[in-house]
Image (tube, rainbow, N blue to C red; front, side, top):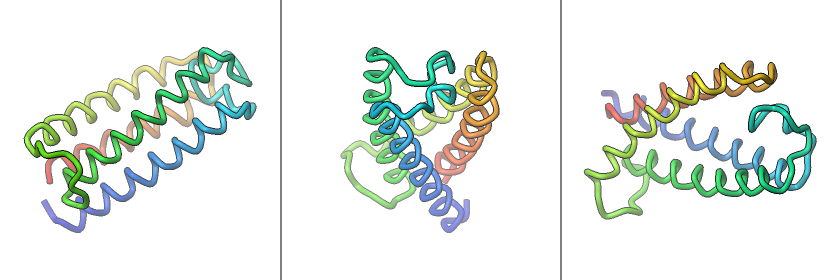
Length: 130
């Protein structure tokens, strides 16, 4: 696969992860954006869901590292084979996210997070194939 395409996909993926980190941090801080996350039932998240948002931030950081390393833009983990497998697992995770977000009771979550998961899944596949 074209190295520029893989690099671009990894960088866009990382930018989207950064955006999601900012979004989750805003939810933790009490921003009334809960209708876009966690099933959309709470405009301001209760404590338990804020803890989930904090966990999400950690996961998004790990996802970014995995994708950047697979694309050859970072070297953090000493297991390139495991990173390659993990990026495919991420592709599956985001593909499942499309289904889960599309099934949300929250219209804003369905219309934003399902397409976002589709884009993240596609970007992850591009990097995985690279």
